[in-house]
Image (cartoon, rainbow, N blue to C red; front, side, top):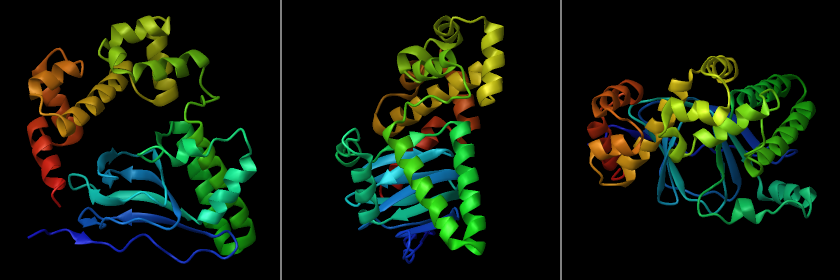
Length: 286
């Protein structure tokens, strides 16, 4: 028997002024939602933990800092990911508010970029972007108790910012040098992260020491940690969506030593590659 419990949809009564519903939600590690769709737009920002998001018959392993815009036509559900609980910021927005915003943004804004793709707009925020959003959310929570009109003003400004982030995901962080932003954009490509640290140094045009200092300063990771995270994310998708052998996946993801891949994957994901593949296939049957 399935020990998990279905939770009610994260639905509340829309505020009459802002035509939104805003809440921070803590989802226990044994809860999930049924497949559903909304008559409104929904924005989710994952703050802590991990979750498995099934949307339009596809899977997303959602990590902290992930921002997702769920459109009225999207069909989705939330599942725990390997026993992890999850904290997320949930913002439901009436269709009318979003249509008004799209119209206000004018002819330079192509709404079909957001509305037409088969999968919803999804981006991973930088530490700076996530920090700015957390500050805005804290202001809204505080003002809601003292001044609801001001809270609604902050909320509308937040919606504007969120849509901008989703529509212009490649906008660079102003607090990082241009070369650094361009380097990170290049290093998320498989052809580059497979090349490891040597390729990263070559693309940066900086010394190894300069690169290491910059990585620590701007994202709090060493170059090797960043590269390995890209390789592991890539291997996760191969394990889920292909029947390739685990050894082949380790090489394709850029690991020269399959034993190191096994150890690192088990440490970071919490399961061996084989156990992860088995459990991910079982979750699809829930």
